[in-house]
Length: 442
Image 1: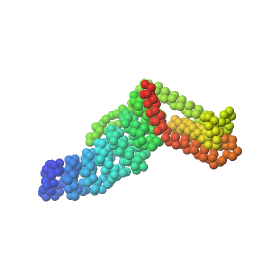
Image 2: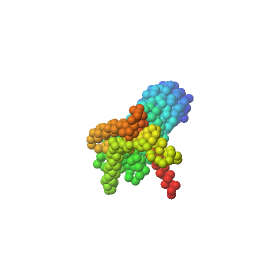
Image 3: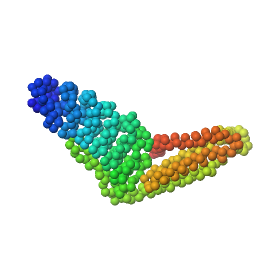
Image 4: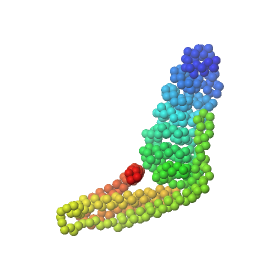
């Protein structure tokens, strides 16, 4: 009789279901006792929507039963992409989105692993917070999307995080301390790395490019040396090496068959290649060189504020006509001198701020980093105080307006800050211009 019941569910035969229930009123419960696999599970596997609806009327409590393989009916609908069945099941209660199966996986995890985008939308609309749930391995849905090469699912999850102001979820580590960026870099998933660090997926600074896993490795540490494109993206984003014992360790993908989990991917560090330490020394040398250059720029720009130039007040010309005379008139006018001073302060301040930012990024994982941050902050305040007094020293005008000085100071501060916020876009534009120039010249 149980076999007939299963066949009826597989074929969606409601008449057969009625006949069997009339012959034995407890047949559905008796089947559920055997491993927790109910007729609702069978109907969800078969994708029989009408049969599912009928069973929900008869036994709505079956929706919460997890079978011996770790699947609830909603887990099955999510894994197979049955959107309408998922809606029917969720009509019983949105709490079903949080039912945990094998390794604490929820229905959203199975939808992501199998790339079922339409079901993902339904699950996220019923339970927006389910994107934060983790598996027994500490993996979020984002980890699973990357490990299973589900880029479209990954993009959908990121957009959902942005919509609900939960972007920091993307930095959550798994039980081994690996963030999504660690996993994407180790798997050489260029599409995901490019999307997170070069695209418009996330605001600047949200993605932690130097997060340390349990082995003390940053994403740059786990990036294969052969994948230069990914390493270049990481370095442009400010990535540095960690302080682990394996400074240039790579990660080997080890695929395990986990039954109905569609195979998971784990990572373990390999022994570093022979030239890894030489490569680390080379990178350290580059970082030291960058620190020296940045410190020189900070010194030069600070000195320029302490001893600012005195702007021209008059030009001695033999003629009052022509382009040179017009330029002389503009340069010595109030508008011209204010413009020249604002341009000088803006460019000088931008160079100063950018160099300070570089120093902070390159030293963020070094000892006494907070003391260094405090000293840099104090230096920036000193710079701004000196900058506020530049107009009175540079213009040498007895009728100089304090309001004009305040305007110049404000513009000379806001313009560099705006440029800093847009530096990634500016860098990409310069890179595109360089590439275009090289193509034209070649």
